[in-house]
Image 1 (cartoon, one colour):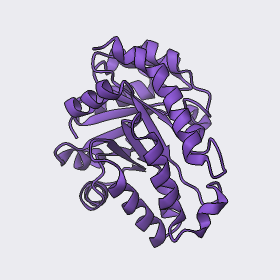
Image 2 (tube, helix red, strand yellow):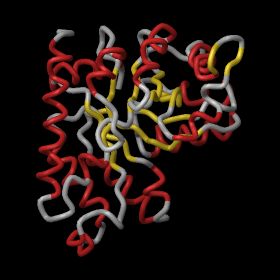
Image 3 (cartoon, rainbow, N blue to C red):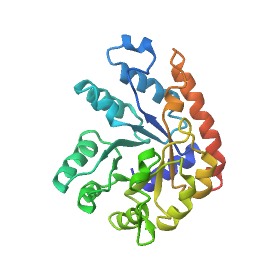
Length: 270
């Protein structure tokens, strides 16, 4: 999917919502365990109830890898079930030496046909560039994360700037606004203004709105650009809104609430 297609979908749905499919056998409704593939059934019903207001789905690959080959089967069925016009993110946080990164890229872009994959930048350009060689595919590079340990390295000062700013500036030379996005945690919206000075036109994937306490209005105030430039991820607040048989209905309701908050921001861009 290219940038124009993504922005068209945002305008059409008046939404920049990304739903995280962090699907856990221990958390899904118990009645689903009677199905042959409980995780896929859970994902299928979540997708059916949220797809009209969602522009992206983001399976966190760890939840599927942990189940072995059954988990990979569930993941493949899930990615094939998602409507083709909806952007897909493999939240895999890969990043290794060049030849290994090439294989990771093939796994997610060719075999599973994801539109994008999250990548860690620590090993530098040769660990990221192999992912950028695929047409209409995206790298989503870890920029500023919202986890507590993010403070250990990302904010260390170097030549008068925090390390994350060096990462953003240097990595923006590897790709462009049509094949690279960045992860910026919603619990740190105060950094978005400075981030936009470095990467004004890139899309940002922003986790942490909802269950983690991120503020949507603050994120939009500092993060929006002329093509929206934001994908706001919500996982637990949507997919686990209920653990009963009405789980899909409740997930849909929560997704609509977020979409309604997003609509005025999209309308201001049209």
